[in-house]
Length: 300
Image (tube, rainbow, N blue to C red; front, side, top):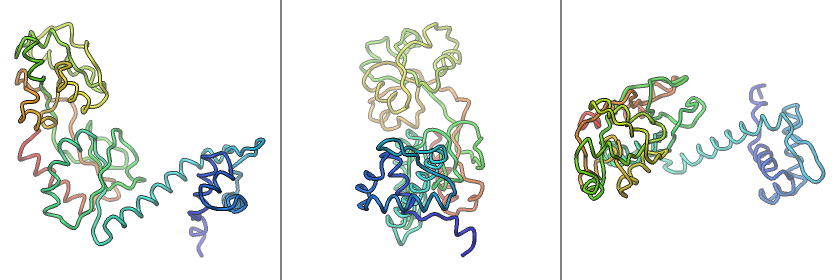
C-alpha cells in the first residue's frame, strides 16, 4: 500500500467522528450508528492515531471537540456528503450518464425546468441532478459539473461562458393596476413598489432611464428572492420590476400585466460556469449549447 493510500481514512471512522461531534457523546453516537460505545471510542482513537492529533477533549460527562477537531469537522462533513452524493448519483440511474448542475433558484424553476423536456427528449439516457445555489462556491471541490451564475464573468478556478443579459420591466396584477392609476409613469411614481433586496437600486435606475425624478424610488416592500417578489406582485402588494423570462406564464395568463413596456438592461448577465479541470465534459458542453439555442429562440 502506498503512503498516499494510507492517508485515506475509513468512512466508518469518519461517520463515528461526525456523529460523536454532533451529539457531544460517544454513547449517543453509538446508539445512532447501532454500535457499542466501545466500538465508537475505538474507531475515533484509531482515527486520532492516524492523524496524530486529539480530536476530542473530555469535560465531565461530555466530549468536546479539540481545536484540531473543530478544524477537521467541516472537511469530514463535506467528504461524507460527497460520498453520499456519489452513491445516489449511481443508484438513481445506474445505466445512464449523469450531470449535476447548480442553478439560481428563480432561473432554475422559472426558465430552465419548464424547458428541460426538450433537452431530455434529445438525451433520454442522461440523469440530471439540479440543485439551487444563490452564491458562488468552490466548483472544483463540489460534485457539480457546472453552475448557472448571474453577475460578472468571475468565478475562482472556473470558466464563465456567456448565456444572456437580463432586462427588467415594471409589472403588476390587473386589479392592483386598475386601483392605482393604470399604465402611467405617475402611477408608478406613487407606488407602492416591490424591491428585490439584492438589487436595491433597480427602481432608481429604471425611473432614471425613463426621465423620471421620482423621490419614492427606495420606498416599499423588500424581498430577498425573485420568487417572493413575483408572488407579492400577483397578490397585489405593489409594482414589481421583473425579467420577462421569469413571468412568461403569468403574462400569458394575464395574472400579471406590463405597466409600461420600457425595459432596462441590467449591469450583470447570466453565465454557464464550468470548473477549469472539467472544461471538456461533453455532457456539460451539450447542456450549454442547448441553453444557448433556447435563449436564441426567445431572448429573456
